[in-house]
Length: 249
Image (cartoon, rainbow, N blue to C red; front, side):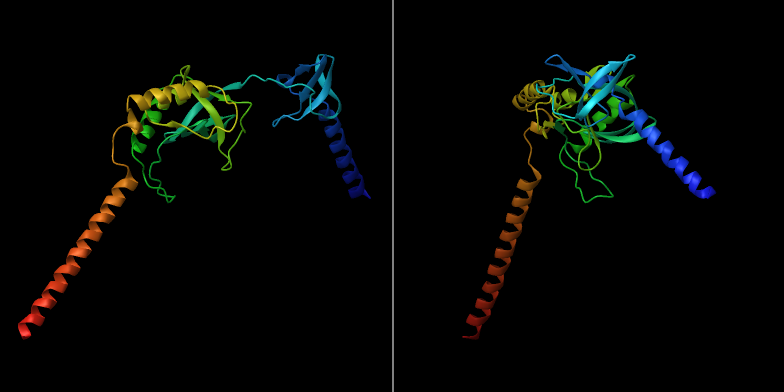
């Protein structure tokens, strides 16, 4: 009997807790649409019609799609640098937890990873060293989460624009030819500027856009040389056989 009473109390406490949090709405999610207000409990944003009670926004209906387009400002957050990874990825302390962040809208050359089957690409080390140097010497690092982007990629990495002392690191990477614009799946902020800097880097042949022999081209040349050597060896072998045959006569 005593155990049943304890279980009943636990269930009641859970119900009370759910009821207490059910109407709570994130203050930064509130938007006005056609004279009504909508808000969300969390992220991703799932909107409910809301009203204000005692200076607190609470939901007054089921989840709905607001009848007009909602333009939300990107949220920015100060973080602490934790660890270098490569040109477009790093680890930061976010909410007292180490998290991996993938820089949004850019792709830097790969560096070799011992735990992965990835070979280093041209300018991979230069891009990695450049990013690492910026982050290590930064006085302030801020992440900007784009409302038109997923919060995480399929690998669980946080997706964000990264500011180093008020300068966007994506812009610095593109400008110096250490990355290119990539993985843009929606109307992200800063992309127009990034594309403009990319065209400039291409014209000036900076970094990855410079004149160089690409790995695949070099492999083709190596394969061609090997083929010529094999052909020459076969011709030489056949020539010796023919000489021996004529020697018999």
